[in-house]
Length: 154
Image 1 (cartoon, helix red, strand yellow):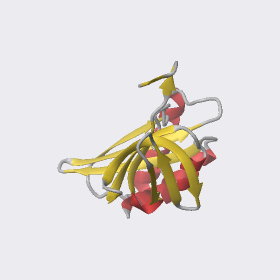
Image 2: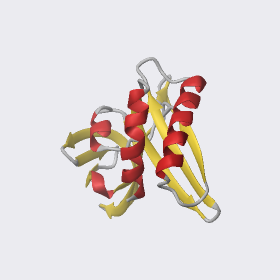
Image 3: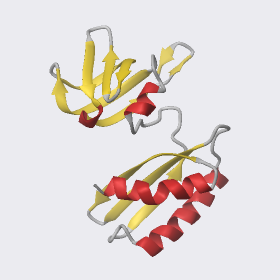
């Protein structure tokens, strides 16, 4: 899987620069690809931090050449509505609202909105007013936090 190889190359660069490697998205397209790298820090991430990481990542990608086609590199903060790339990251947001897209339907649903109510290893439970959905993390295509502002879901 290309994401795993890219993560193994990029994570040490980001961490050496003093940031946390949050995750990445590799989106191949007809005319090239998009590589989005998400970095985080305790006090947040600014534009200069992203530019610094982008320069270092670009240098390594030029040498290692893991992407054969043309690509665009984008480095950013994961943001408040962050994508969650692992069961551990999901566990860190226990009780928070999340939107999950599954590869295989669970109880007839592939798109689930609710709160993270349990994480046991790779088994995740998301609950809403209708029901509790349990699924393995390897069934997750995308999981994203859905922050609540002033008691109103956005």
